[in-house]
Image (cartoon, rainbow, N blue to C red):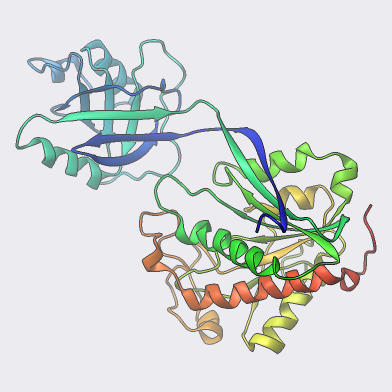
Length: 385
């Protein structure tokens, strides 16, 4: 495909929040504490009795040069950290109590030079670590990264077509640390790759730019950095942006972004309503599938493009919201169950995708690309340059 596309790597700094601990060649991913120092401490894993909230919990326990395993609860994370540090531990792994959750980011309450690297694990992972050391000492190696890291958006634009009248379509290439991200957003990433490959067999009147955005899951950072890197002239060359994030949800809906604002009273820039209608017509007339609108709630990478005044649109098959009986009547599936029960979880694997939903949505992407690569006339906005 190198004959068809010019490929660019757009470099930017992204916030990082990576944490885990490896024992017996098994890595247990966790959440770094806010204000934890970075590091890769390694040593024998030692379970701390009680809750690690008192110096007495360390009496008779040798944690010097080792990694402490501590149950969550009773005292602040900062107390657990400082007590483990004072006892000589190189790092600390906290695991959840039965009544705790991993909602939000655990915090230490501000930087402290005495802090050691610390992460929080799901309860089942902590119990697995306890089980692993019950038979004898085990070496644990932590990895904690919270400092901004260099990463890249990948941009591929057709060499042919009007380079001043560009269709941009995008999906994000990252996932949350908790899961593999096959639906969120491997489904969008793969759909773009397939469409790009097929498009290379044809000529285009308007240039088509494919964007694989990094660091979406930490705040739409990649797409925002890309839009902010473009001059006003370069932004004006983008006639339309289409976004594809989560196209294979197991308990799917066929959702089209509400470009005209008729459903949610949040419309996109001029041209967005026409993009919505193109998808509606394709679902109605070509796929014979039901569809529903979804709101421009700024939860995905279209947000920066819309803020720059660029028309936006796209497709979505649902995330954590529970499916309604009315939606079951339209799409099948189970009412009262999330569109994707594996959203942002370890179960977001290739085994838990609705391939049929992905295929229909990918056909819709191909239709939009084929239409706008020939002409933007249906948008009704003329040249933006």
